[in-house]
Length: 304
Image (cartoon, rainbow, N blue to C red; front, side, top):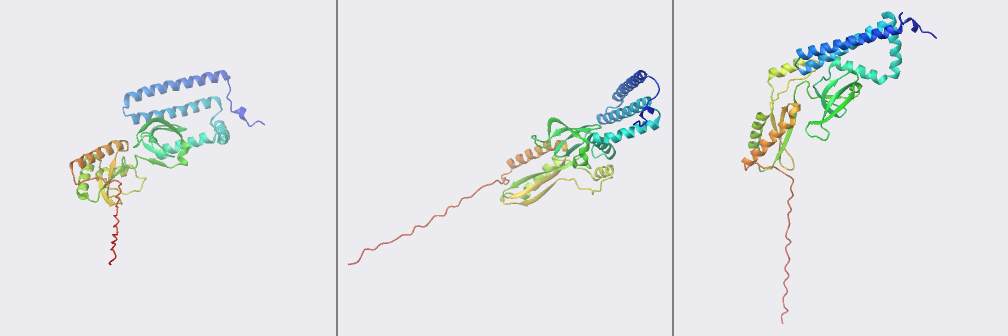
């Protein structure tokens, strides 16, 4: 049965169409190289360079499809009919690639994350280094490496995964995360003094943001409903079966968490070395032995 596909083909030899198609491809390759040289010269910021280059790549691909499609098929009407029929068939046979394409459009439109963000999805954590039509790429962190540092591996994740897996973004709505460190003192230690010293250590080594900066972050994320939170470091007091527990809470850059943690720990250790009335609590056992009193028995000789 003829569905009118023969009407799609334009008049002219196949050799002519192939030649013109190759010329169109060569022209757009030349335009892409020229645009890349221009962007390399004008844009020094890596992130802006990446986004502009990506947009131009997709734009050139779209134009190539339009020009070559109009060359091989009659008019825009038959072309749209052809693409409609082709899409119906591809929707069944290429479901996963189409879902990845829709996922890419969702990422571009809604911006759940962008290149440069640190995210976690489906248990995989990393920095987003590329987003293309079918997948996005992470530079992996974590796994066998502690404190969210890079493993050196690259992970490719299909775009469709954003529809079935939750994403955690380390860089939104604020460009920082909260971290905590717990120190347990003995019950005999001077915990008030330790708390004051810990607060000074946190102020020296952790980040903090003023109200104006927080309001600026809020304006940049108008789609989120959240209240401003004081970012000043704090020390909370509690106790457990081992001793008095002090919890140090502070904000840090997601990519500097380990370095900040190390600075705070080292200063705490140095502080304990200088103060004899501060001591760490650690698991211990006290064994108490009770002496059994020996009963003395007295024997008397019989009287005569």
